[in-house]
Amino acid sequence: MTFLPTVLAIGVGATIGASVRYYLTQFMNATMGSTFPYGTLSANIIGSFLAGILVVVVLEKANLHEAYRLLLLIGLTGSLTTMSTLSWESVEMISSGHYGQAGINILLNVLLSLAAAGSGVVLARYIFSS
Figure (cartoon, rainbow, N blue to C red):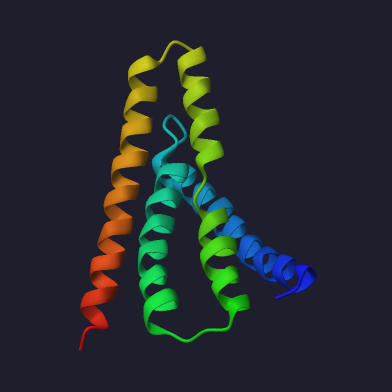
């Protein structure tokens, strides 16, 4: 693929992923409160689970055009998950003296996101093994 179609495919996926992350964060703040970054945590877990599924489907099972692979794997899941917001929120907690909360935030994001990605891979391989 040439430069412009690649950028366009990634951009479309990123627009969708970032929008989902924004509205998911708004929903989590409205339901759980904003004293802990539940929105970022849920976006990272859901995005990692989706990425695990998509890696199997897109790279191993489906014969998709490269544009769709870029849209789904890089654009969508890349912008749905957010390392930069996790980092910023954790630095804010540390700056405010909430060291324990920052540590819990980092641990939950990393461990649950890794578990979600692994679960997505296992689930997709199980579903598509038949």
